[in-house]
Length: 278
Image 1: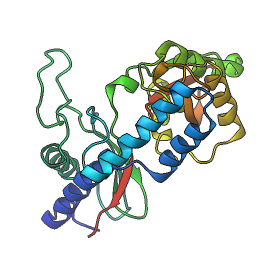
Image 2 (image 1 turned 90 degrees about the vertical axis):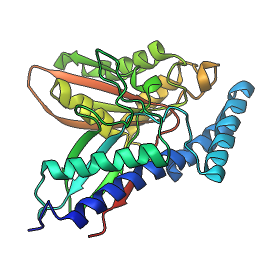
Image 3 (image 1 turned 90 degrees about the horizontal axis):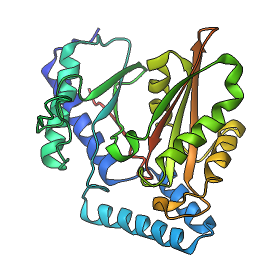
Image 4 (image 1 turned 135 degrees about the vertical axis):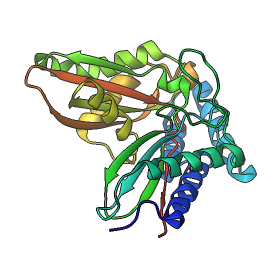
């Protein structure tokens, strides 16, 4: 059993958290870049192709200058994968918090986290229940960062469907994007959570954004086609590609319920994983 209070381990977790955030903020994953390039080649609207060219130029500039892709560096959503020989303690969470504080200063990240009612800024992207930390079991200790900006997050929705309404899921996802329009900076990636509980479906939807987008199931492609038929296009200026991908995660649910959540992510689907050396 590994001691969760080992200073060297806690320092390594903090450094991994900072590095994961840095990588996520500056470099998009290859599957996302590939999807953007493919969208540029397939787009039928000249205006939309110009916007996609601007996105690709933005990515190159961020990489060349080693600066964040977007001025909204989001709030830190962290997935901490923990092996069976490491107890989960508050010390591990505090190590992640310290990594977020360091990243805020050094990447740098915009201080986005505020107290919900007073709107007082915490100045370091930590605060009550922030960063948003999800613990998952695994073989190796690692930190995955999924920064979430407000423009896309604000457009996310959840709906408690009746079990008899399962055929309405693609319609609900498309409706979510229709209401969002250009606000989440399309083309988007949509994480869809189906099943679980009210809050569980939302967690599934967000976790779906961690999956590579270069492969989709027939059901995911069905939903994607429904979204792309809206004609919203890049940055809401019209076009044939409103979403780059749809990713679905499911869980068992109550026999009388069918929770469905849509977590909207802009084209900058920022995610990075760093293994903790110990």
